[in-house]
Length: 156
Image 1 (tube, rainbow, N blue to C red):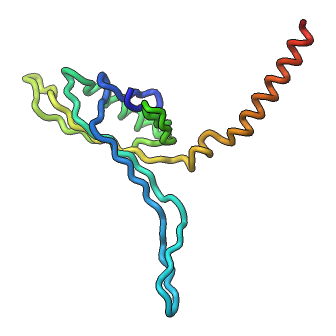
Image 2: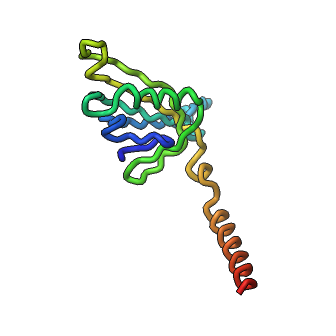
Image 3: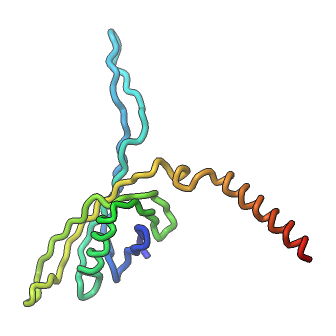
């Protein structure tokens, strides 16, 4: 597995991408000052985009059906978790665009080569916001486990 977007798995049999480009923009507006240099002020993260691109050879890799699945996910208009096979959690992303170029066709018109570009935009605030307060979740689980222990003790 190279990457997953929701339940869609990027791998050799589906959509193996050749490049992953991640762009993060930060907001630095400049405030003019009298007699001094303008002063930039950091306002935070602006936009994070990930662009996946590659070439599909339907005889070897995924093809039209795999790209159709991505288009259907985009049609849903939902955010999906993006996870890399190495364990990196990127966050929640929406599909902005799916671009395809079909070339080198068979006699029936099917493409032997499909170049694609998939653009994703992050929509969650942060990983902490996505997962919530880990300490609060752990404390809740411990409280539940303590309650179960009490119930089991009463049964024995």
